[in-house]
Length: 474
Length: 90
Image (cartoon, rainbow over all chains, first blue to last red; front, side, top):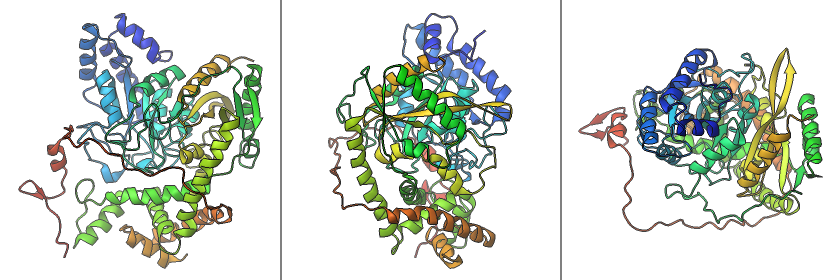
């Protein structure tokens, strides 16, 4: 019997290589688990019909003596990442029947390794949201409390990993979409440096923020996937090389910056604050220096750029070449009807807001100003990182909320206060499970977030491993 | 903002809206724009971008890309002789 709850990629690799179990055995156990749990959780939108064939192909390679880190490892893939010949809907009615005609670069790299794709996971439509409630195919439930959201937008991916329906998963992060659900579901999520992982084959939400990254049970597992999917790509000219940014190294006496004014500000839950203070104490015990830093609230800046780029990127979904098509009297009516029927509520809202902040008369006050503020923030971060090595915050100011609790859009946007900054500046960030908050008899996971300077993923993996070793100590 | 602004933006974005949706969107947009408006108060000096925008070239040789013309053509809403068919534009 394979103990899925305790299984990691590292352990599975050893077991597969030593023929303790086969890739087909492993995939079958996951399929059975999915059958048992997905009906209620709604984390997968589709479980692929060829899972066992993929696993058989992996077994054939293992039998020949091949051993690659992800050969035969079952993964879940977010529904906005293209796998050739498979549906990819971005959880939208607009792309309900859309079939990908090529592989995303990250997928191509995983295929070369022989990873097994179990299925495509639920998300907020076009990666717009923070709870997976904006999916056109129903909300995903949090495995720790079925009445609550799993976070978003990669909520399906995080819920799959947390409920043993996949060993690990791919998500995408625009303003916290990997980190927030990872925190709410009690798993590890990494948003790499902007450009570290190719965006080719990832449906564009905010092109200057988007990045693909892993969601896994442990820091080491996340690292294994990260090492496979990263790299410069001809098909994405914004990808970076190994030498774009200077290498960071792990020192014992790292200085960690903490923006206390933001954390002690209004809107941060008391349990989150208490948990965070405990974490700080543990890190101090390990010998890390904690330094108070000032960080601005970047939500206004973030959302202006988000609306603008989303409205531009989503203009392509017009029902002409693919996707939902509604027939009107003329081409203009075709557009109106197709977009009207295909886009969900939050998507419409952001497209309209984007059209507004980009329109003549408002451009300078909103988008123009936001771009300048973004540049100023990048400079500010350069100064900050000359004095510290890492920044630490809670991942989210509140634990997972109840499904339907946040009915107005703005209140949900405020949950992104700690995560959006890394996307604006382009730095890597990681969410780690840091404990639980007991609410109404359920233990809800909490997360902390480390941010490193550009290209500093290795530092995140090192501190993550260290934190994992001490987090359960008193 | 008023309902006319919402209608105008919806037409620019080519999205058909019902009357009820327009009213709901108006109130949402008012509160969201009210929030992001705080960017107006930010004092920012004129900053030069440190990012030099540059072209990313590749060698001028043919790279084969693995994609399926069949899958693309299968998804055309309307087609004729293997071509995408669209409504008259002019």
